[in-house]
Length: 184
Image 1: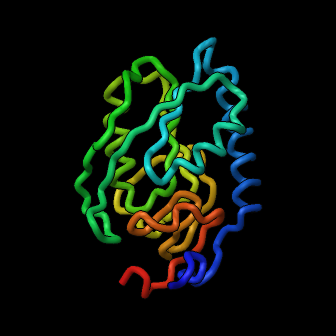
Image 2: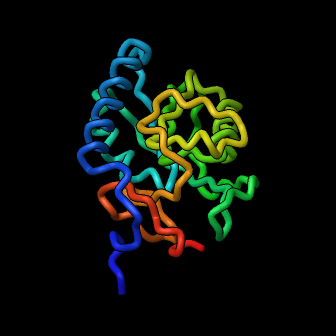
């Protein structure tokens, strides 16, 4: 049996590149929200399951009072293509009047994030912003405003650092490109 790393064509983003960029994002978010919160905390919502490693690393670099919550939403069935139909599997508590920062692993077609952001905007937060570790604009089907982007990536099937294929590869400490024969 092959190891997880042997299933990859290449490493796209190393552990060191990820760590450096996550630290930069945390510092930028801290700076941007420092004066905006007016005594409130930042409500950080992690999109499960893919964002859990990124979120864990990122919040440790945000030097503000944060409340943490999680949401599960998906537009994927059993394959590699978005169905465009969004399912909310786990929702968050009340966000009204809160400064909300959504943490996502990757924005691809945009369907999931567009829907999640519309749902949360309808709940009247004080502010709503999205941070995505990866952005794949070449696959975008609907517009999504990403306030903070870690890396723009090419149209390749990426895994690792929380991102998976068929619930595998999340544990890789870097982001790699999966060999096509692994998912075709």
